[in-house]
Each structure stands twice: as C-alpha cells, then as structure tokens.
Image 1 (cartoon, rainbow over the protein chains, first blue to last red):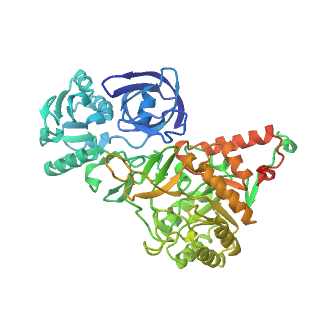
Image 2: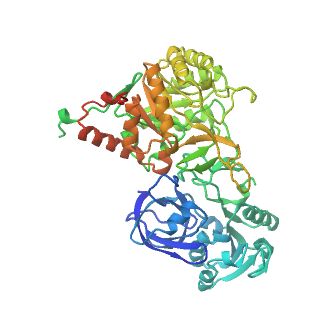
Image 3: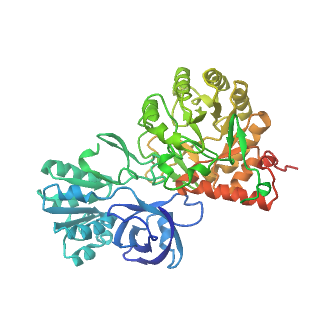
Length: 252
Length: 315
C-alpha cells in the first residue's frame, strides 16, 4: 500500500524556520530510495486542500525523517502537529537518485550541491553513497547563515562541507556554484535557477549530473499533469518520471 | 451468502450504460485508469472517464499550471495528451481489461475532429461511452477576441457538434458542459435536442490567482479552471437548474469529497456523480464515497438509490 496513516514519532524545530518530522512506513512497504518523496496531507481540513511533497531526509529502515521549512499555511500546520498524532501519507513516490548510473559514470568523486533546504534528500543520498566508497563533498548555498541547515550532520558523516551565502554571513560570499571545480559527478537539489546553473557547469566540465527538480505538484501520482517539464524526449512529469532527472535531458 | 433481498439497489442508468453505483471518476483526474491501479480498486467504480484525447498530441500549457486556492485549486493544463494514435496503441489494452464502464473523453478543434475521434473509438468494445469535452477552460476555440471561447458557451455550436457526432456512433454520448454561462438550461436543452444521452456538469469555473507582492499571476497562463470543495454550491445550483430543463440523466460534479456531497448532488437532480479533484488528494476516495453511499442507503432505508434523484425539499 502506498497510502497509509503514519503515527508521528517526533516533530521538532531544528533551526529558525526548519523542522524535522519522523514517522514509520507500514510493514511490507517498499524500500525508500534517496530522492523519493512522500506526499503528506498536513491536516484534516479542505484548506489547505492539496498534499505537500517532502523528500526523504533520513532513512533508517522503516523510519523516515522529513526536513521541511515553514513557508506557508500548510507547513505551519505541519509544524504544529504533535507526536502520536496520525498523518495521512502517500509514498514513497517518484524516482530517486540513480545510484547505478552515478557509479558507472566513471568519476570516483561526487559533489552534492544543495540550495537551502535542498539538503533534505542529499543527506539520505550521502549516507547511501558512503557505502560505495565514493569521495563525497558537500556544497550548501543559501541566502543567509540562518538558512544553512544540516551542515553539521554532513560533517558527522565525515564529509567535507563547503558553504556559500549570498550575504556572506557564512562561508563564501556569493553563489554555491562559485565553489565548484571540474572533475566530479554532481547530484543537486534546490531552486530551479541554481539547478540550471549547476547543469550548465556540468555541461562545461563534461561531468555526469543528476538534478532533483522542483515544481508545484497537484497530486504527486502522475494524474493531474500539473508538474510537467520540458525534456529532450518530450514533456515529463516531475512527480512520476522524476523528481530526479539526468541534467542533460532537461530543456532549461 | 449475502441476502440479495436486503441489498440496496445502487445501480443507475446513463444512456445505454448500467453503472453498478452512481460513482464515476472524472476526466483529467484519473489518468487512463492504469495510473490509479496501485491506489484504488477500479472495478468498484460505476464508470471511469479518461483524460481527454485529442486527434493530435498536445504539450499543454506552460507551467506553473496548477495553483492551490482556498479550498480549491486552479489548473491550466491545456489538454496535454499524446493523441489518438498513442491512446489506441498504449491505453486501450489496459482499458480492455477493466471490469467497469470506460468512458473516453474527446476534445476536437473542429467538428470533423470530433467526428473522426468518435468513429475510431467506437470500433473498440471496451469503450462504453464517448464524453464530448466541449468545456475545457484552457483551450480557446475560435478567435481570442470573440466573447464565446468555449463550444459549451454557445447553444448553436453545442447542437451542431452533438448532432454531427450522434450520426457517427451508437455508443452512449455524454456532453460535458461548462458553468461559465448565463443560462445553463438553454445549453443543456441544446445537447438533449441534438441527441446527447446524458450531460455532465460542471466543468471548472474560470478563475485567476495573483500574488499581491510580486504582482504576478500565479498561473503561467493567467486564467485557469477552479475546482475542489470551493465550487460545490455553484455546482449544485447548475445541476439543479439543468435538472429542471432536461429529461436525460445528469452526471453531477464539482467539489465532491464525500458520500454526503454525492447524495446532495443526487438530491439536486444528478443520476450519477463525478469525483475530480478529490482523486488528487486521496486516490482511493471513490471507494470511500461508494461505501458511504451504501451506508447512507442502509441507515436511511433507501431501497433504490434512484429514488433520491431530484428529491431536494425546497418548501
């Protein structure tokens, strides 16, 4: 079953606007791959009406953590939900990062590039990639220090973390793409302009690059067709064909 | 063994189709059924209506083409689909396996296209009915400057399309109508007089969503179609109006989320009901609504669900 009621294990604030919520997938549920997402009904009312998608941030067997930023009505309601309350969850949905292709891309090092809370699925990915002995470096970009989250978690995994902020309040002053060097494969998650810049760089360096795309989702299951993006092989749906795509396929 | 004499009669008739219960899934909210098979037992539904098929493939409108609004959502998908050829090759095989009525929604850009689509689709045994989508709010027919943008806003055009299609098929014809009109009675009658077996309403209501700070329209296309619980009272009004104008059955829809909503539509005159936006939020909603209707019939001693149609008490 892809639709289930999940008991909230914990739901806590980890930064000024960021929260982490944990729940368990039911027995017999499919294994969750980094980059896949859960579509969550945050409350019981008709407003907000639609579900909200959250990438798996930490995956420990059936225990899933999602990292979210409070940006509007729905995430505000989610942030107020208490442990032991039930959540209506659909998932895991979509296709996550393609680890096989990443491993066969030829590069022994990979750069994980996050814009803001784009770190969410990249943490799960980093943990997974570590088991394959790849050299992993993490790049986090944000507008300001207060929006840089999870850098400590990556460091605890023993990974080198590079930070860039637009206002210079932490790390390099400027864009995260300023920090990238040639030679490694890339997995990126963040706002579209950042992904576009990353894809352009990977084209320049001729390196393998996967991006987790962001679009408004109506249903998350591939039926409303709201989240279409243009690719070399016609329109694709972010929710069903993605959210992770080979950057080369996307027509920016 | 279930004692059949105690079972409540839930089946309803739409044209030549017998629906095992009044619950259908609406076009554009259930894919081509295959996408839904992991989420819901499709065979329990009275009928499913496919995403609209056009003669040629369409990419649809630019994104963002979905935006949430209070208790509703706007869409401007623009009839994205892979066209008739792909539908026949890749969608029909799954639809042939379904044990429920399959209604294929079609959208043409000329009367000839409607005719051609109908002729080709009528060749397939798994197709129980053709739904004429005369009311997609995101595709403009004729010149942008003309006031009547949708076929279903013009009773003469409705009559023309329906009567021409009528000559091409023996299958049940359902005409999908728009609420973006002044007098739904006239339009509904035009469909009936032209030989439509049923009408389905309402399609979405024109709407706009704007960001006060960026001053930008939230949809790339600016205008979209509003759906969801926000439109239910409007939809009930239109069904109630149409019911007074025509004798053919009405498939009522607009914001149905629960069995109670479905019953309300039947009381206003609907013979069957369509679930739309609700499928996006809960892909198994149809089974909940069907179970709820069964429970309602049992607890309210409704022997035959058809006895509810049009029985709203207004005095």
